[in-house]
Structures are given as structure tokens and as C-alpha cells.
Length: 115
Ligand code: AMP
Image (cartoon, rainbow, N blue to C red; front, side):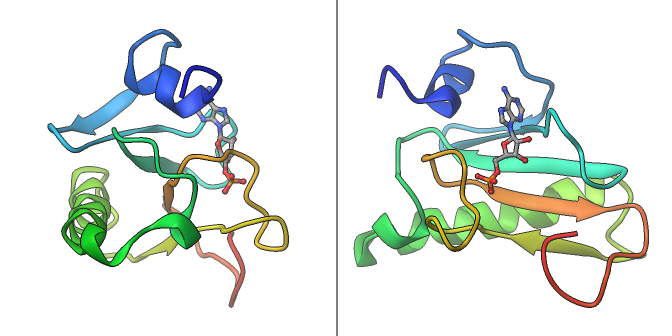
């Protein structure tokens, strides 16, 4: 998707601060962090949102979750705790139309919501 900002980050056309990557996904620091640790896990393949994920993408979904776990370990918040968020669609507050998993931590987060 040429106009997709996260596709361009995956392609290296827009710089990002990567913390983890493999052949299926990349993880990079959010440009406007809402917590001391705020990393986005993004599939390399363009998937519009969680709503666009297909049943055949179950393996990819699992990889995204495992990567969120690995990011948390790497960032040192696995023990203190963290939040994993997937904003989906307009009412979900999704602003970038490429599936991404927020990993938030490093401070006490509120009882619910994103941060
Ligand atoms: P969402 O609101 O769930 O769609 O989240 C999109 C996230 O992408 C926001 O937290 C933005 O701060 C973040 N974001 C947008 N552009 C960039 C960028 N170029 N590099 C890193 N994070 C970005």
C-alpha cells in the first residue's frame, strides 16, 4: 500500500526506532508515546485492521501476540505489567489503517482504556 505510513516504515522509506523484527513483523517505538514504554507491533503485510484479519491469518495473529510479549520482556516491563491494545476502526480510535498492536508500560496505567 504505497500511501500507508506503516507500509512505508516497514519498507524503510520512513525512519523508525525499531526494537524487534522478523520476517513477518516489525516493532518500533511510537512517535508520540503515551507511556514510558510504547511500542507498536506491525505485520509487514498490509492488513487494514483487526476487522480485516481473516481466519487464515490465525498464525500471524499469534505471532503478533508473541512479539508483544517479547517486546515487553525486552523493554523490562514483563514483571511490572503492561497493556496490549488494538484500536479498531473509527469508534475504536484507530488513526492508522494498518493493523498495529500497542504495547504500553513503564508506569501504572488507568483501570481501562488505552493508557
Ligand atoms: P492508533 O490510534 O491506534 O491508530 O495508533 C496509531 C499510532 O501510530 C499513534 O499512537 C501514533 O502516535 C503512531 N504513529 C503515527 N505515525 C508514526 C510514526 N511515523 N512513527 C511511529 N509511530 C507513529
